[in-house]
Length: 120
Image 1 (cartoon, rainbow, N blue to C red):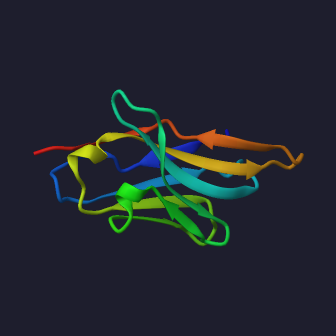
Image 2 (image 1 turned 120 degrees about the vertical axis):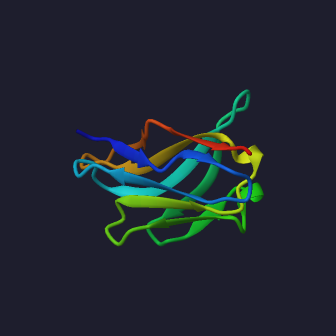
């Protein structure tokens, strides 16, 4: 089954850290890039961080210097290390993989979402 499995959300106090991970199932082929998005209550989904196969990364301005995205050597698992968390980081975080399938079709896969709550 083609899917992304997300792990690592939870409740943390302001200033704390969390590490999210996203593992692509073995049936997902041709991953070009992986990314993390989030959707906070009452807001639109936004890109938090992304990484391509050349390990080039991008970050949303508010998380620069606090969050780090990385991938394993096989390029099938992405991680998001979140430090110095703030209440405004509270959101559902979604993993994304942008792939080129065996037939040449480009498509997105999405994880089910994991809740991150930053609160004292």
